[in-house]
Length: 150
Image (cartoon, rainbow, N blue to C red; front, side, top):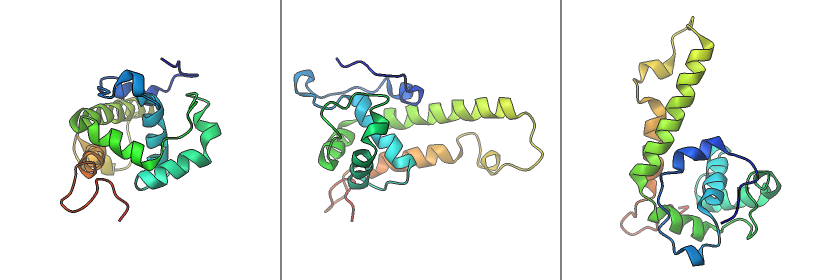
């Protein structure tokens, strides 16, 4: 197994995800895929084609955290892996991480002097809806390829 160059705390929330791929056939470790997908999405990529392009353009950046010895996975590889993942586990891990970051930020910031829109949405907040939306987009739709850029 390839070691990480540096710890990526954001990816720790996905440590419980099961990688169902055959270990001997894995070209791209799950951590590499998760890092490039999260960075791509946070940078505005919409779909696996754009995520793969983002990864190719920012290969030097992501190599600061993982080696990416095989380069960046193509959009088909990203799509196949995300279709095989447990979507609920992905969503739950991501939501838990975002909520822990929110709790830390709230603790540091102290009392707020203005109304917070995230507070009005409730405890689950918009992050749960966002992560749930990502998980739903990975399910096959009749007549369409999952996560196709149509």
